[in-house]
Length: 120
Image (cartoon, rainbow, N blue to C red):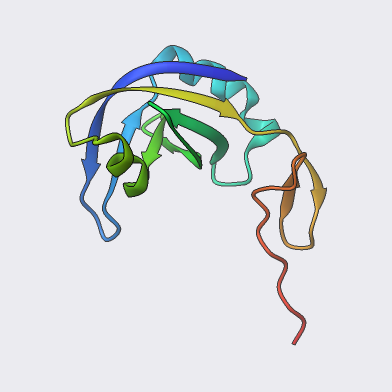
């Protein structure tokens, strides 16, 4: 699934401050329909993203009945993005979870695995 939308960059000031772009309601509906097949827990949806010419991987976070895209500092620096800027975000929802790796799951491409715990 591929999505493209524009949104305002906002900042969450918490114990781990971060910058986000909210996913519009129409796109959230589409994401909700694929969430059970791609989420790796807590409603997180793995995606490949692009802002301007900068590509990145992340996971959409559920928030207030919708989703938000976390914008890494490296992406913001590369694209000269600041708080309250309007950016266009392109997202590709990463593959369906298929293989177990002990305590986690791999996507079809072998990404997003939570590493298995080592035996003690």
